[in-house]
Length: 276
Image 1 (cartoon, rainbow, N blue to C red):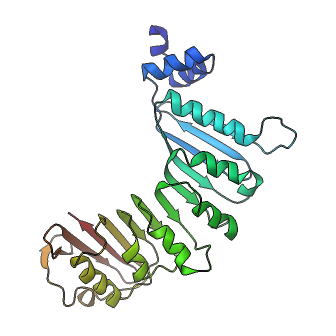
Image 2 (image 1 turned 180 degrees about the vertical axis):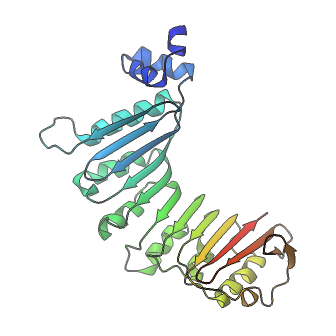
Image 3 (image 1 turned 30 degrees about the horizontal axis):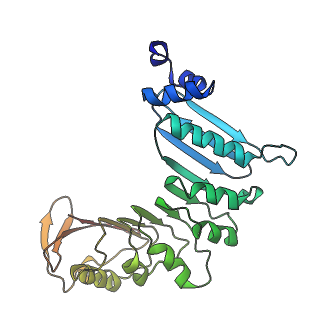
């Protein structure tokens, strides 16, 4: 056991595959550290395990002739790594083009029982597959949403109302004020926003009255110059002079304060709204 303690992380990992006892010993020592575990499902399945001093890269190719499927090999290695590193989460699960090479039903069922920190579905994924992944049992702490695969607006709103730490809305999605007001994530990042000054003003007034109670951070990027006076019109605030204009708002019930910072340029406006 003293020898195992001074091994490099890559050697500790190799040793854990020798037997069930070795696997248990490595896990019990809690000496191996893992920075991140990433799974990418594309034309092949790849798994990357990063350490402080090394990283391990595994690839599982699609091959009908293999008795053991690439999905089964992936499941085995993921479960092994989670066990020896005493963790229950995957940092990034990414679905990209040609992910339908594999048994998606199996993959989605497997990852439903594992905590996924960040779920990424690239815009290249076909709409029906994109929708299947979003509607799957996988629940991620952070969702990168790059397109709307649904025809009915109520379907995408079912995704917005899910409880998450963070959701990132990219320009391929028409994200309106009604969508923002039902989004339950603590951290909301919106890129290429179509919000008008009137809508942003409406949001501030509704937040003061109690809307978005779970919100902790809202970042909005608008591809145009905003009229900041129109954004805060009719709202009671205390202005803070510090590297630009900051505005402090209090919720009507007195339970929270909001800080609004606006960074304006000729072509892009950035709005940072945080809750204390």
